[in-house]
Amino acid sequence: MKLRFFGMIVVLGLLMAFPAFALDLHEARRAGLVGETLDGYITALKETPESAALVKEVNQKRLQEYTRISLENNQPVDVVAKLAAPQIINKLESGDYYQDSKGVWKRHP
Image 1: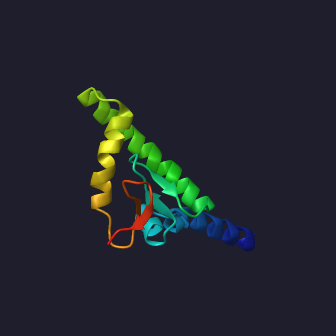
Image 2: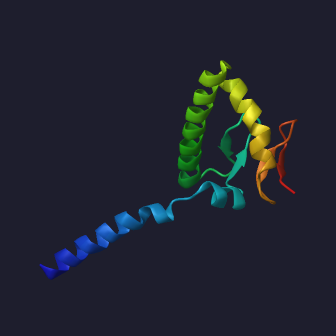
């Protein structure tokens, strides 16, 4: 009985700590797992389950925000996203990956 209770506590603790193990955008950029594209979204530079999940999550959130902005300004979503790309890229930290105007991957200085 005590062993079963202890096992449940351990599992519960791991489930609660799971978000702490999740990869965040800053860490993924630092590790070269993702990069900023010219279309205002991120893409996986190294395919891992964690980077794929992060790309999906970040791009869904960006699409929601771009959609909101596009409705407010009567602009297509893809135009809003492409206008956001340079702003995002200009705010990257040194060493983060991005696509230049020719689509070549570079590291932010």
